[in-house]
Image (cartoon, one colour):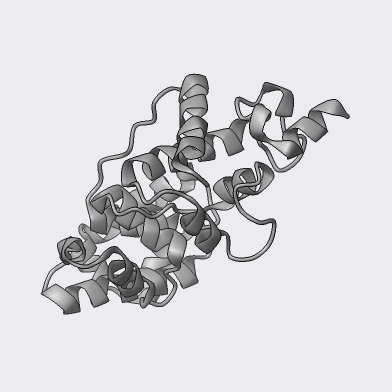
Length: 219
């Protein structure tokens, strides 16, 4: 996808939803909350994170806790056993790397090496790793969740099958600011208009460049 097309998508969505505001969060905290967010909604993610801190007092103490105790604290987020293992392993791996819970060293690595380092932690995939790198370090990766993937497929930006993360990051410009805006805006579009079922195609700001939407709007 040419930069001009990507910027057009961004501009149309800004016109519809306003300029998005990226959250300001410590990279380690962002890693933890992103792990907690898997397969749940934002409210349950936030409740699980609050419960985690209320139970253990700090993420340092979480790293030293048992998986069972962590799972109990984050039960509201679902998949608690899996997430507890991922959380503890990731926190301990960061601490083993630099002696404390600090992901600042990723800023000194190439984007690809930083992505690979995060993905080497059990349970951390490209979406979680790229969220940390894009939001905390402005590294040019587009995190692809179900909303982002669905919208990009429908507008023909990526193929209908295969690795959505790889296809999206090969297709889009390597511009962290643009990708950050697109990530937030595409999620909003996917939640409000470009829904999995009965998308509101006639109201979509991207309709002019969306074959799926034009076909749906005509039927």
